[in-house]
Image (tube, rainbow, N blue to C red; front, side):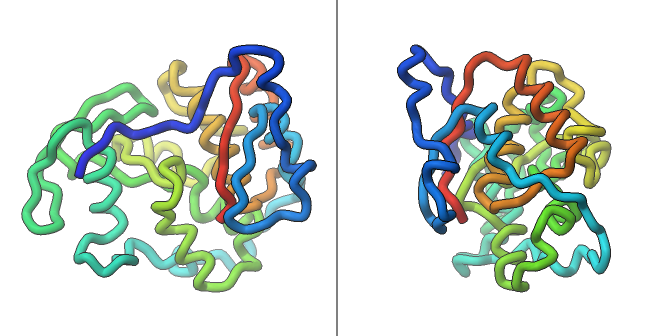
Length: 221
């Protein structure tokens, strides 16, 4: 029931690998379509829009739910999946294991010390387009187990430091995490067709410039 968290970030080996489909080549957007593109191209393809927090409430994104009705809610599913090695469980309660919080390069054995972070916070998603979604779509977003980048087990301290900030104002304290974080942020925004504001776009572009050639592969929600 455990696995090492897979990050869909792959180094480009040759210039020929740059000849991959882009969002622009795959228009209009189709749900469940899988696209691959360089990180820089993915950032350029994100819509730019001013953000609005009007009407936001956290309850607009119901979580944590038990979508498959196996008795384990989304938080417990993520803890079990992201554990490095075996976990101890009491029914669906994860009681002991080993987790690596890549935001701050810390290792934990006590799941109570971990938060499940929405890579793109709920409030940020609302600001970036989710305010126009149905309740069912927001529930699916808040409990997205279809892409391992959407939800991540990290230290409670780092998650609460991040709060609802985007990369223009917050990045993981571990510098080694920055390229992975930017790629995962962009992947989630691409998966859910969420926009970026101008400051966020500038920050992502600058940060991606410090990463070696990277492609992201995303299946649209």
